Length: 367
Image (tube, one colour):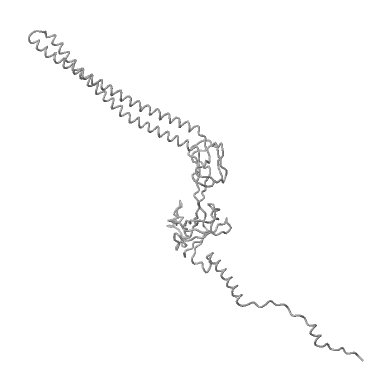
């Protein structure tokens, strides 16, 4: 007879069932709403900061913008051989600091020559004054000569009157009267000669006085030549006009340079932004509006500034060859208006800006 297995009881069945899986506790609805709201606010803050949709209506953007600065070309005002270049490429320099020197021997000699010319002109002017005093003294002697000639004439006239009386009564001969008359004529001629000599003396004094004006002009011209020579001598030392940074130096010791030769560039620390917007974008732009911008070299660091000024005309008006649309087919091209942006103060990253860097600008026209 087969054995029939006994059925397991209920307690055994309960022990052989698999355990239930673990489940996290149910999240509250309030916590979910807070997380969603925080994420939404963060997204809206980013969109507003970059003026993206739905905030895009109050800003204008362009990537046609660059950092600008007052780049100065350093050139000599005199010609000569460069004797020293004390600075190195990209060095920071202060105002008045020596950048280069030119051989000054020729210019120093010219200063000495001009100084000697000034001394010679002053000596000539002094001689003119002495000549005037000498001629004035001679004029006094000529006055005395006139007085003497006048006295001789008075005596000759008296002798002539006596001679006429003596001839009438037969005391003297006619020949003696003629001799007296000749003496009278000589006295009259001597007086005329003395007066002419005095007139000549007066003209000599006037000539000296007139010549003195030319001598004074000669002194002034010589002094001007001395100043010019001194300026040329001073220009043999080339100094930095402002606090700035040097570019790569394009001249070395021993090189011969002429007036206007480009030696190096000076880049000051003060910079600004020039952004070229399409004409339609400038409709709501005003001076003083905020401008946000990023520079490629700074890895997306955002800086700010203000509109300082706007160009008085489109860029095409400043070109040498202006477009002529009077003939042929016409294609409308949006013109660009340059906007100058002043960089806001107190931004550490602004010290890293260099003229020529590319910039992306956003003008907040709604503020």
